Length: 186
Image (cartoon, rainbow, N blue to C red; front, side, top):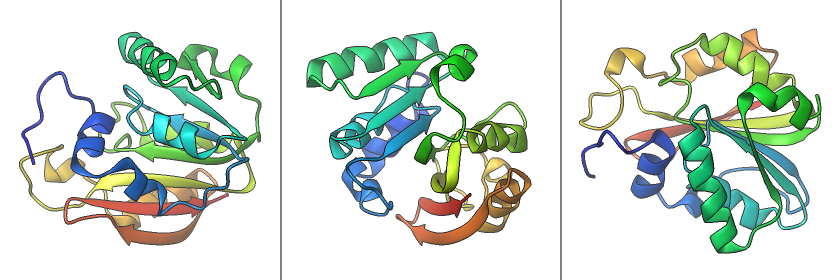
């Protein structure tokens, strides 16, 4: 695995480490679902989601305008029209409350500068009852890539943050020695 550079974003690092399809294979996806990709980065996983939900829709957002622009270019190059890329500041006017069947939050909690609980509450407001949210995070062990071990989250910490936002634990899976996936339900 290569060292993280200043220009790489978490979703790009994850996509280089694991095949996006390997991650999607762990999710309760259906081709007609409406999904969210929160803190999507340059869209390394967003594009895979959009291809899978060919009869559905993907709402993707990131704080960085340059990463959103890069995602829009990548979407245009792949001729995908079922993805809406939006600025988080316009989120309430773009995504209807309780409209998402599922969401992906990849390597976003451990790198979040703001309250993790507030972030998950924001995600929860867009989720339908029974919807799932898949949280991919670095395993809580020392490694050369990713954040320091004190910023990494284990299953119990992710579950606690999710419960504060109204989610309940559904399952956990190890994606590799470096990453794990926790699925929560609303």
